[in-house]
Length: 267
Image 1: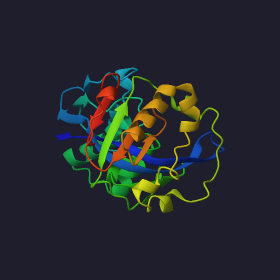
Image 2: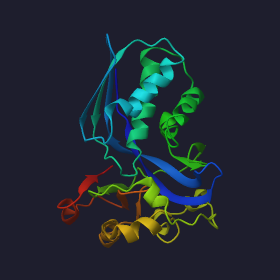
Image 3: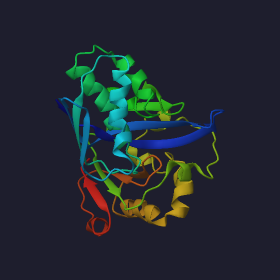
């Protein structure tokens, strides 16, 4: 059985407060986009994990797909499996690629082995894998709050627009992105701001991580400026970076960016 985990972007991101457990409460809107990995599971005599495509840092044995398998295996009599992951979603880009792989693994195992888990049960398992993992269970636009794992449905549809995403060869650690951030509650809820026309988002919808990431990595700031200079209605870094997306009225080509960065069109 094969599923195709997809990436997400953040439409705005506010760091609201620091929690007693060391995490931060945030407010953001997760929006799924059309950049996909490929995830296949086959029954086997022993469990194996194979990864191809984009290199994933760290020990393969620690991959989130295997963590998802072990999480369910603890509660269900799952057989040994062979996993094939074709990685296409950029790593360390603020696109939730790892989270998507883990969550889609839960969904895939639930379907393949007919475990009968509900959406809510799958979300509860996904929350044990990471803060934004639960989003990928239903995989539709949501306003996310708390650690990023509590959701309410958000009415926002970008189907009539053209999205361009740029991934520079820069890895921004989440710890670096949070360093120096000053949490504060926004004056106007992001939920309300995203009901405005996209052309009005530029002055109002912010990603708080940009205030710490851009001074350290001016190349990322330059990508955002280039998107605006070429007609983007709205442009922003996604999550804690390093990818930047632009929303356009119609298709564009940006060859200058393509010479030095990975560019995805029409995502």
